[in-house]
Length: 132
Image (cartoon, rainbow, N blue to C red; front, side):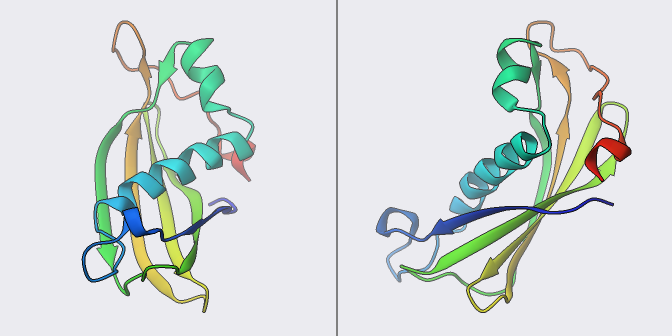
């Protein structure tokens, strides 16, 4: 549906478990950073949405399929793209790739578009053409 934006990371000691493997919950932290980078790269700075437009995008659902581990010191790349667009929500796909360009994890995130103060659904204002 759209092109990918990219976010790079390196697995630090604090990101790993006792075996030196990227801790499973850290994928969510990295995913959030990549999602915000994706919004910025598409001309929708999350900070502007949050503070000026009073619109937030909380996560409603998340699904991660782990394929290969990232180890301490590994560098990775997250490809993020819009997969589905509805009136009040977006589904974002993220592909976690290692430096050999192997798929390590696949993440799908459904975010809803809400008014920050009233917590009611707001039209996403997105169009597929704007993300092409």
